[in-house]
Image 1 (cartoon, rainbow, N blue to C red):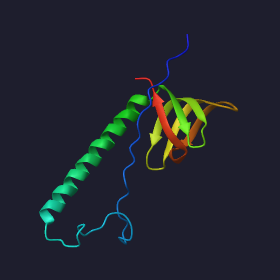
Image 2 (cartoon, rainbow, N blue to C red; image 1 turned 60 degrees about the vertical axis):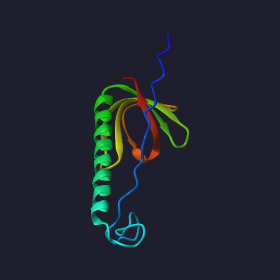
Image 3 (cartoon, rainbow, N blue to C red; image 1 turned 90 degrees about the vertical axis):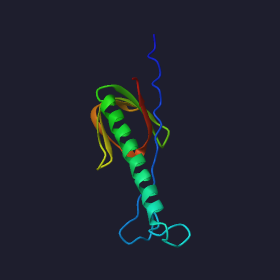
Amino acid sequence: MADPLPVPVAILRLPRGPDTSGSRGFSRRSRHGDDSRPSENSRDSAALQGARAALRERFLRLLGRARGRRARFSLWNGIRLDAEFGAADVHSGAFQVDSLQTPLGIQGAALLRCGDVLEFSFQL
């Protein structure tokens, strides 16, 4: 009997924050060009920060549950890979996997760049 297909996990990409020069990202001023409502802006900022923190915690819990499980990775170029999920290094942007099954064969251990991965899924 064939293994059931893993349930895909949705990926939510959040916008980047402003850089130090303020040339891209979010404006430091309100949408209408006046800063007359700082309390509302700070409330919106706190709500946004709370939402980002909740999403980050949810993502990190997901990575913790994936450790040691068989996972299927879909890459941007259309290739699908199966592997045992090991860990994720969010700062350098890589997934560490074991027993990576590729079209060219099986690799004992590998790093997959997060930028190459469109989605990944695993059984709960």
